[in-house]
Image 1 (tube, rainbow, N blue to C red):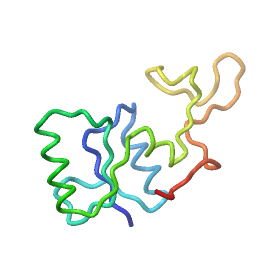
Image 2: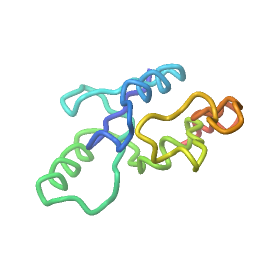
Image 3: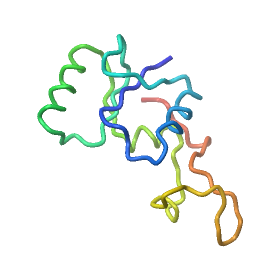
Image 4: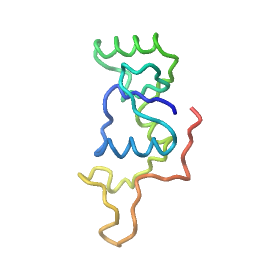
Length: 113
């Protein structure tokens, strides 16, 4: 099992959906106090000084890979339809033609970090 720490929860409507998706591939979300952290997910590299200190501390304590939220989600097959990405709730079906709409694509999963 690989451990993932999010510096801040990603700007994503349903964080439990992300946790469910990454657990499918033997990853788990952990807190900063975890004994082992394999990946640190950051939204951007320009955080406040307090958060930068936390990042530096974690980097010194763990041998981890730092990756952006966008890249991390993309590697797990995050491939939403751009027409619906800003909707409050992502639909299961296209309301105009009834086609099924998916937010994840198993064919583009690439976990080689």
